[in-house]
Length: 360
Ligand SMILES: *Cc1c(COP(=O)(O)O)cnc(C)c1O
Image (cartoon, rainbow, N blue to C red):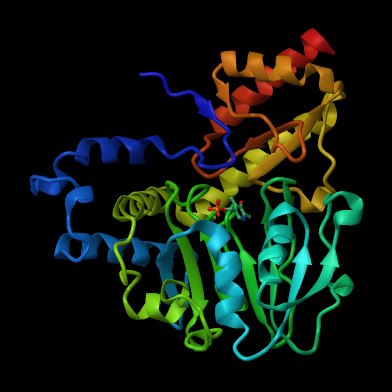
């Protein structure tokens, strides 16, 4: 069996022990004579799998009891609509902090429902930093403040949690949830598409403070109403059962790695190695302000963009997959999520050094 090093931004690498367990259980789950995929979502077996996944996520992130955990569908993109539909709660205005392509896209969708105020934008510096707390122009009458703690495309990370006073703070944590501890109590709502650090595509986890539920915009589809989802344990309709099961296996794997605290140490070490190498290489560069560099997504450029194609062909041949930057920014990007081992990062750095020596 050959497992190559996968630096894909999403759907991303999954832990090998998770895939192996899924393989072993695929035709006959726990001696029941059928696959977990073929069971009713209302069966006691699947309900137990689903509940265990929720409990493990609660343990990993120390989610307070007054928060609901929802396993939804439609990806983070649907959250761009669900957030205003559920959280305007009679208000009209919402504040958005724009630090990259994803927070910008969230604004585009929110404008269909809300009077969007841009509290800060770093588009002027090409999304290479985050605004400081004192630069946030927060509205007195905003129903909530939305931001993206880790911009997947630009590789930009907030090094602080915005202080929004008594306003509801909403975060798109799609690409950095479970990478390091989060103080959930600072947020009204957190959402994250699964396909980066949680599991396979098909699930979007929403963590929402209970008191925010139940006051949706008129016309909100039933499936977009967080309260309906919460009241039905995320099974108002048929949930993506296999993705949910796999997410549960990832949560158990993560617990075995020392939880979020344990993996955070490894993540910081992996990222520091890669940035140190890039900064000292004289061949590669990363444009992001040091304190705002993502520990999950590391974009970099080569000395000469004409070498990009060669770099991608040679890296792929060397078993290092999916290093092309996002189509909107070009260059390279190494996504080094939880399931990307330190060994993979070491192999990448060794390849980069060899490439630079040959082409520099
Ligand atoms: C990947 C990603 C998205 C989009 O997720 P989908 O599941 O494709 O809708 C949104 N926001 C961030 C920060 C992401 O990394």
